Image 1 (spheres, one colour):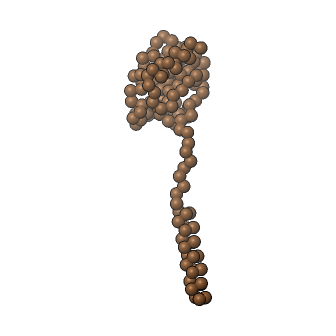
Image 2 (cartoon, helix red, strand yellow):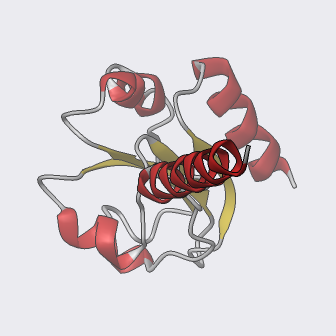
Image 3 (cartoon, helix red, strand yellow):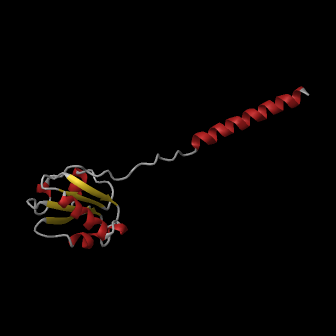
Length: 139
């Protein structure tokens, strides 16, 4: 009887140690994070046509599938009042780093002082961007 009790205690100890070891080796998943926090201020001198009253900046990457075709949608806004520019990561990594852009696509609408008045993280529908620009300009 005592022998069976000793065997059971030893077996329980071995199983507990094995469970502890497996638990410690299991990888812990990274916490969910919100990718891409949009900047709130831009230096207009960093972008084309710094004297235009409005600026639409599209931060992209050539490795980003959802970036394809977005510049064409934004480019239709180009006018005397609105400058539209694309900042591709591999061509202008410095600007992505300066403004801490860590997600693409990211589209910003900035006023003449460089204050970001609206932003889009991810792909957008053309009417969505056009409406945002029109509403901000009308304020």
